[in-house]
Image: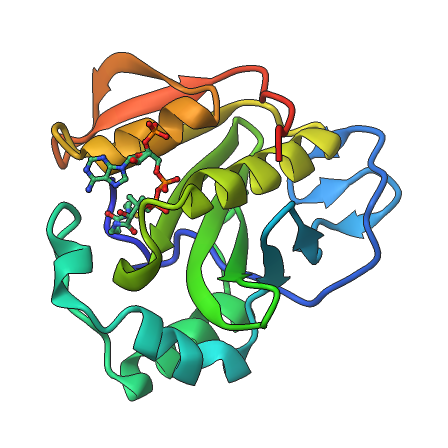
Length: 203
Ligand SMILES: CC(C)(COP(=O)(O)OP(=O)(O)OC[C@H]1O[C@@H](n2cnc3c(N)ncnc32)[C@H](O)[C@@H]1OP(=O)(O)O)[C@@H](O)C(=O)NCCC(=O)NCCS
């Protein structure tokens, strides 16, 4: 999967009441203003829209070098992450894109990862990370399904992810979101997984 948070792929914005879009219009949801990430609650998790204040917690979440085995990169310093989040929150984003980014939290509010979505008129490209200590408990699948369902409620039901061959954990997460390997690979050699339409969330 593409290296998460390495560039202007996705971000988050303020929490707003859940939008009820009528149809997707580029950066905007008809009559409702710009699409923004909303707080999401799944059966075991709370997903909060990224804020600059999340940087210290997320620097800890992203601190294990093992997290970068399949994606490349290395743990960001707090300064790097703060700068990255500021860019992601403030933009400017590339034309035709909306960046949405959620911090994945336990009910205790402990941050354990993130899900990001780069939204265009073609759909949403998703990425996910769960901290090493919390992996293999179904959290990435649950959080990503929550985001997929929310996107689907906003008429964004063409979903993709870029998964490195052999990255079994991410392949399984993609599968749990209903994605299948497309047989197409990006310039980094990662396979594009896709689903259309988005599945319904199963908690
Ligand atoms: C990929 C990642 C997000 C998976 O997170 P997770 O919370 O452990 O995923 P889940 O618990 O939802 O696991 C989904 C499935 O994958 C399996 N799985 C998870 N990690 C695995 C691993 N390292 N090897 C084999 N299977 C794995 C789980 O057992 C589960 O199996 P199931 O399909 O039988 O239910 C996590 O390993 C991670 O953050 N890795 C580093 C960052 C990364 O590469 N992110 C993707 C690119 S942005």
